[in-house]
Image 1 (tube, rainbow, N blue to C red):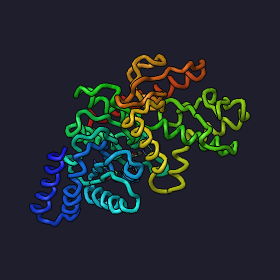
Image 2 (image 1 turned 90 degrees about the vertical axis):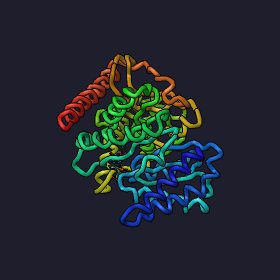
Image 3 (image 1 turned 135 degrees about the vertical axis):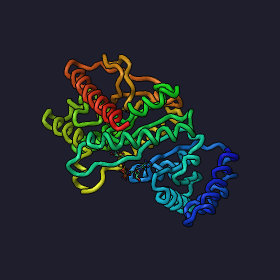
Image 4 (image 1 turned 60 degrees about the horizontal axis):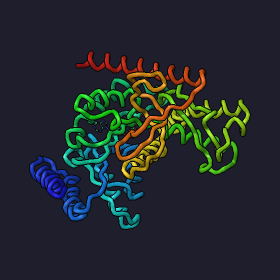
Length: 359
Ligand SMILES: NC(=O)c1ccc[n+]([C@@H]2O[C@H](COP(=O)([O-])OP(=O)(O)OC[C@H]3O[C@@H](n4cnc5c(N)ncnc54)[C@H](O)[C@@H]3O)[C@@H](O)[C@H]2O)c1
């Protein structure tokens, strides 16, 4: 690890001296990396965050400040990644954590990561669906996942970029061809959708969010499947506590939770809750928590669905997805889940068509 970091520091130094234009971020990052080489003699968990935008930078901040992992932040805008990393490092004496954050556009800084969080890509603007991002983000995801895998072949890969189920399937197409098993290729959406649902329920009942155990399945689209029957409040099923009309209202608001924020922000999409949700998954993996979290997983027959990424409850631990839970869904819930899976399949087919047309 020390040698690797020293090599990265040297490369960054060389980069700053050979460039015709000064690369100040490279110099400062090299200095930070050198200063911290000693700290790497103690093995720290390391997470690559691809994309230093709203979701990526917020995730990096939470990973470090919660003392979960050191972070290599990469972005096509190397200065932005390096600048945010440096800014976060300068908060260390106040936040008092021991984690390192370094950034740039050179994937060598990501080498040896335990987890790769893929957040690079375009975010939605008002009037855009997640699927409108399909073609553009597919090109970005392909390039980034290949570059990250070359540096961290043993990592667990979590994709966030939208449309997330299709982008995770694309990550799977790339990574499984390189021998990465299904359990190490995951998509993040269900934790976010569940968190939104839990917040709306807590608000409606005026109880602590800690009492809510939400259940949201399916793809991360308007046809996601919040399951009221399996959602509990201090162990009590939700249908025993709220009238059907109110539950339906909460379900609809959950399904449209993303666009509600897109419309409020006017530019960009939600990032605080998406970053928190990504970090919860990473924490479960790095700390081998065996935590059941809704995750976009490659289904191979579970729920009668095969060959597609869909959100289902999964046990996350050191091996990534350690188990997929099969809930006893009723006919309607199962039909909704299958229909959501079909939407993802359609999207994946569209994505593959667009990608082969562009190749
Ligand atoms: N899965 C979910 O639940 C969920 C939730 C929120 C956002 N998202 C998605 O996450 C993605 C990021 O959202 P955001 O709000 O952080 O967007 P953002 O625009 O703030 O940041 C995106 C970053 O990606 C970088 N980037 C673009 N192309 C790149 C490339 N080829 N290599 C490296 N970096 C590159 C950009 O420079 C930018 O810094 C979007 O696709 C968004 O739709 C998903």
